[in-house]
Every structure is written in C-alpha cells, then in structure tokens.
Image (cartoon, rainbow, N blue to C red):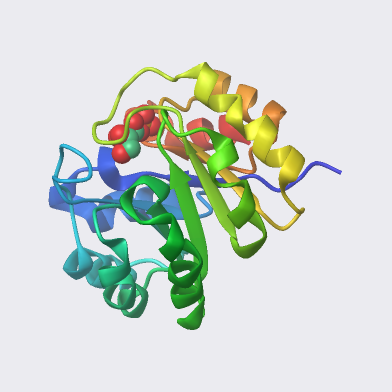
Amino acid sequence: MQQKIFISPSILSANFANLEKDIKLVEGAGADWIHVDVMDGHFVPNITIGVPVVKSIRKVTDLPLDVHLMIENPEKYIEPFATSGADILTFHYEAVDEDNIISIIDKIHSFGIKAGLSIKPKTEPEKILKYLDKLDLLLVMTVEPGFGGQKFMQDCALKIKTIKNHANDNLIIQVYGGINNTTGKICKDYGATSLVAGNYIYKSENIEQAIKSLR
Ligand code: DX5
C-alpha cells in the first residue's frame, strides 16, 4: 500500500501582502499542511516572519501549521510558537548544543505538538540517528536554507536513505529545497514521506496540478 505523502507548501514563496488568500489557495488545492519558514537573519542570512504572523494565520486555516525554525536559540521560542498555533515545530541540529536536543524535543512535546529536527546540507545524517526514536519528523534540507528558488542538491537527498534505514515507521521524513515533481519523486523513492515546496507550487500555472504531481 502506498504510504501517505504529506504535501506542505512553503508560504515563503507566497505573497506576504496577501497571506490569507495564498494560504486558502493551497488549502483549496489539496495541501496537507502549511510550511511556515521562520528566519532570524543570524542562523540564516534572511529575515522572514515570527510569532505574530503565526498567530494571525492560525485564524485563517484549519490545516496543520508546519513551523520551521531557522533561528538561533530555538529553545527560547518553543512556548510562543506552540501557544500561537504551531502543530509541528522543527528546529535545526546546527542551532543547538547536542546536549540540549532531547530536552528541546521533550519541551515541544510538552505542548502537545509534534517535534521535528532539521539538518542543513553540510550535516551528515549519522549525527542525528540517535534522536530519531524521540522525533515525529526529520527534515532534510536539499538546499542551503535562507532563500527560495535554489537548485536541488541530490547528494543531500541521499541522506533520506540512511535515515529511512534507521527510523521506525512513525517517523515522517520531510525534504525541502528545490522540490518539484522530478526531484520530489527522487526523494520519495529514497523514502521521504513529506515534501515541502515553495516556488514549484506558488509559481505554477495550476496549483492543484502542481500539488497532485508531488504525490
Ligand atoms: C529554506 C530554503 C527555501 C527553499 C525554498 O529556507 O532556503 O527558501 O529553497 O523552497 P523552494 O526551493 O521550494 O522554492
């Protein structure tokens, strides 16, 4: 039986002046989740949105908010994002001390939401295998986080195979960066069960078709 693939359009590629409209657009086109890229200009060289925006978009969609913290000191922001409506809260391995990872995951779970961990292109999957059993989601970045429309890095996608071989069936293996129908299929064949896409979805002629083509 084909495993469910969660499609999570990234609002980074949406029109920030009309977020409600662009969220409802993908919701109506069959999206499973809404991917919210939080960037602080320190962990990544871009600044996007924060807690007030999550609070606002929570009111305009019932879809799960898949919040991706590309920020330093994510542990400081778990409560505000969790209480503002995040359903999944993903932080970066590279943004925290390894000694704190388990306690951060536990803190996210204490709010009754799902915990995700993400790795940048230069981070080897072996670094995070020991955390897989505690996680709900593992996000493999197939571009250097920060800016949209970059080229898919296939060598990064190969990490999915390693993670798949060490994960239990409950772990959602998510991939993000340069995802379209072709690169998305490569990632699914490696074992990915969630695809995040920004440009491919929001810049397409037919959003519904674009989302369908990722399944
Ligand atoms: C993560 C990445 C994104 C990503 C954009 O922050 O930097 O900007 O590439 O998604 P796509 O590649 O789907 O437009």
